[in-house]
Image 1 (cartoon, rainbow, N blue to C red):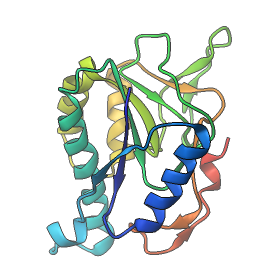
Image 2 (image 1 turned 90 degrees about the horizontal axis):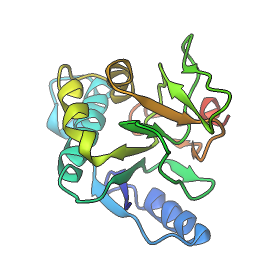
Image 3 (image 1 turned 120 degrees about the vertical axis):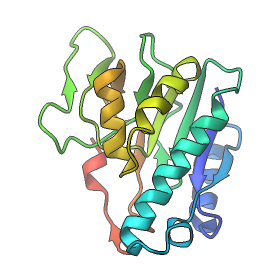
Length: 192
């Protein structure tokens, strides 16, 4: 499994923070994937909407690239993620395994008391996940049914394919300036 980080080239600060995080955990440096700048690609939309489209495009394009990696699993992180520990692929049939997430929706997870993970049902965060390479084509088929906020589109994936989530966060979303909203975000909802 290799690590891939979606990051706007202008966010050298986030790239440096992630490199330090990986070094601290003894992990090899991740591959940085230049994110799509939605404000440039979609100038006819509001900056907020264009940024969401850019984020969606970035995830889809990276997944398309990873579909032929030859690995069983690949790890995808957004550049405001912080790994708390080294992620490992789950021992289940998941297409996507979330490394942390928000519980904003009712029934975000289905509790599986005897297992080290829960079933992801309505997880809204895409800051860190592991994807099973042989299922990427199916994931992309679902994602490409509509272009919207990537975390909302991922719920469509969770409804059609088996997905799991760690019981205790392995990756959190660091407080930082959001390129999508143009504001500083505390991201406390992802720290469970």
